[in-house]
Amino acid sequence: MQAVTYEGGIYAIPWYIDAGLLYYRTDLLDKYGFAPPKTWQELVKTARSIMEKEPQVYGFIWQGKQYEGLVCNVLEFEYFWSNGGDVLRNGKVVINSPENVEALQFMIDLIRKYKVTPPLVVTAIEEPTRHIFGSGRALFMRNWPYAWNIFQREDSAVRGKIGVSRLPSFPGKSSASTLGGWQLGINRYSKTPRAAERFVKFLTSPESQKTLALTIGYKPTRKSLYRDADLIAQQPFIASLYDIFMTARPRPVTPYYMLITQVMQPEFSAALSGIKTPEDALKTAQIQIERILGAE
Image (cartoon, rainbow, N blue to C red; front, side, top):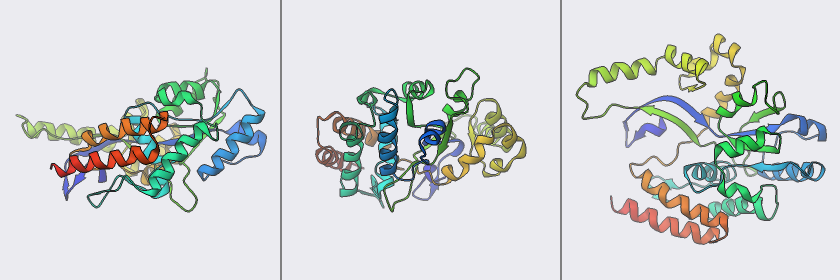
């Protein structure tokens, strides 16, 4: 609801939901006596230790190509939100902050300093990382819930060997996944708004959301369905997602988000690629986003 609410007005209805997850290899963690990490520092320590014993396995893969997925990664998993940072706060641009500089530098350090993330992530989106993890060549992966069902197929190399958890955070800070999913609204110029309204009500009903969850895998936005016995029996994985979804955060809620993300994507990418320092990238992003909002 936060994602579709702006200045007190609600502009759409949530249809299905998504959020970033940490996938991990339960067999490798058990083999070497590690638990799923709660902090990013624990993830680095665990990954480096296991990589020494399993040199063919990457430590941690994620989506770092210059596209919207990069923004989702930067905002959530080791970065802004899990270190107390943000992009907008109370209508003010706060992307250029010490917390965000620290977080973006840590993202770079995963590749260059700690070497738990391979350089290939700067060109990777969801599917390439899913294929790497699904072939057994990575210990940790950030991805969306859709990958779980694929990993459970009979021909999967990691079937029965994976777990998921909420994404780690910096010490003393809270984990927060980027909210994904779709919303439904009615075009103000529609010639048949009543029919459109009935269709939206149908698609967002508990019955439709349950059917979509069972047949397609769309995760419902109706809270009651996470207690539905039939759904849990057929998809036990869905019950574990509830707490993660409840702490997921939407990207900046503003009519100008499409302009803002077009600023963040190249700046984040420049920092990852070593073209800019995190300080310069965030400084430039701050100036450009302020200009976008100032032109309102």
